[in-house]
Image (cartoon, rainbow, N blue to C red; front, side):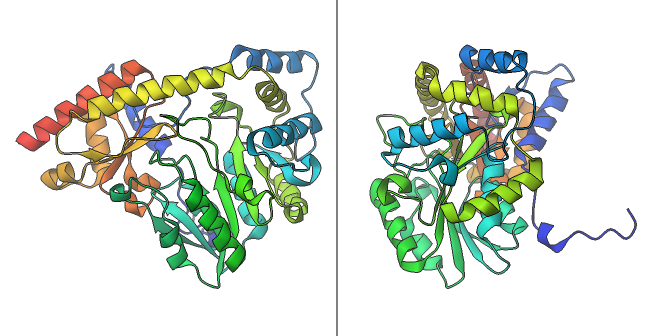
Length: 399
């Protein structure tokens, strides 16, 4: 359009690239070829039946109209009750719980409520791209702290401490971590809480993958350590835990002083969350939890299959996931042989070998040289995809 100028606040904001890779894979599939999908972070299970039945019941009962902007009271109360059970902390559902159209919207609204132009946001890189995008939307300066394979992609609080300035307004953590599969130890979470208290910045803790931990690992939240939401935001939701990615329903636990602002933002954005999704989420939270445990066991089984097969691939490195359902794979040796960047490499794997990964640069500048695999998909896709990847690596190294 003639004369159009991109608003400054949108400079550097990119759409989530996983969906572009998925589209490229679908294009190859449309020619009749099979593609093993290891690129997208969707739940690898169907939404449990009792949740779907609750949605159908809500439809039949006419619960199809606007709800309160921050969510129906029944769901917000249930979230507060689950927080007491899971974290050992009492919160006020009216003052501290907001329901949103997905965890992503909860993160954006929370950031917009506290950030001003010139503020600095520290976020993990590689990491979920929403953190950087939301900070840019808010006019803040996103500053990455690097996660490395040498440290098994653990969030290093010392590295965060080195980046803190008088302008640091927010530090983002994600545990268990997308895309690296790492988790934060309790002592590291505690050290970050102490840094927050010393310097006065907020912590935004994205805990959407917390049910998916392996080999007996435990989840450690700053909420459990602090015992309150003072300068703390917890982002969570139903997408991963209950295989409800398409229902677009999430929530944030926020300090009371943010409630009025977050209410206004959510009201302006979408008026309210989907009524049907809220009643389904209530059934998810208050109903049987065995489907969650079943998914956890299934993902651990799939993780083990992926680790075994990746161990047979020459020319790569990877860190075994301790949580979430992703692993980052260092393919720099293959890229050097091909003289190719990671994004082109991913497209080549799709087109030539029929296996789709996500290029690491979709997850931050420090993702160059890496590809992310999701092991949330079926075991058949994991086996087929990693056998194709092994063949590709062998052909590249022998060429």
